[in-house]
Image (cartoon, rainbow, N blue to C red; front, top):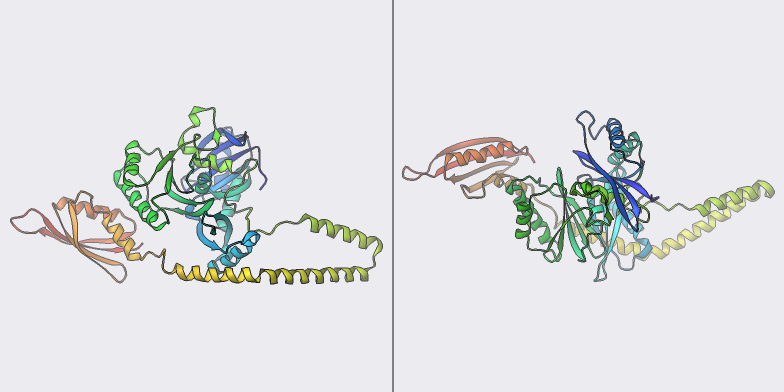
Length: 465
């Protein structure tokens, strides 16, 4: 990727496009302009030509001065897989990863664009995180930039760009939590490279319940990571989370937490105090990954898996063509080409034989990992169903379940008790408001006995996922 002295970072979400303009300065960057562009209803994200025209007018109105950009995507559009690499793989990593992609993504490989980043740990092991993005989404982002009058120099992950920024952390193993309007994403770094990036299935509001849901999800993920509790958690708060919510997160997660902000924890500075809002953190980090001397952690238009361009072969072909045209007859030219092809075939056969041991080890590692995968990271659908049902129950214990059954077709029936009828109706209202739940019905609701005020009830519903 050709780096620039000044570049735009575009953090694209379903709701908005955050733009930050960064100029190269003293090995880092200077944020010279930043603004947020809400996506209009009449120009949605899946109509890039219309959206690009609106974005062009916005950039001109906000006085952005450069026409080159790096675009950051949400993790909801990405698929990331961590792969162990054989020891001493060296320059052959791209070949091993290409083999893994052929096995892991055999059915939809042609519809995806791939890149990877490697990780070397202190214990001597090495791994690669393969990241895939839908080719259709990449083309839409390119069309959006073209309609806005921009030249795209890279397309990457917004959260990975933030995770790679100079946050001031000295921890070898750390997690990066990215809170932004419309989503929550988590990245993991072990040693000197990435091991995961994912979108969490929670939405953050100012209510305490949403923070508790986030905390429970983080605890589940951290418990599955090696050395999870000892890692440092870096939080990029682009939603202006209130202090009470930040305090609650710090209290309930038993791990060191660092609250990052722009520009203090980016390798950048700004002279305009009005631009210090955390809203522009991801966009500024994306731009920093594209200025001179840097490249994004993954880049879907300059993938490490793309074959290297060889200028020497082109020069050689021109020299041969000129020599043949001047002094060599057509028969001698054909013989010369045949000899070159034969030499290349012999060389390729030799290289293939040298790689045979590494390829065999790579295939063995891929087969073991594929077999082990069936024992992990598979969450039964009924657990998700039960989680969504119990999220409707209040935390203070006004309603509690005594039995629950899930039958074929995700038909759920449960009974319980409550301190009052209003508490039961409140649970029913929350279940009806959940878009993943349908057919919510009350089977009965009555007092437990004449002498007691508590209420017995039963409900049924269907979970559609």
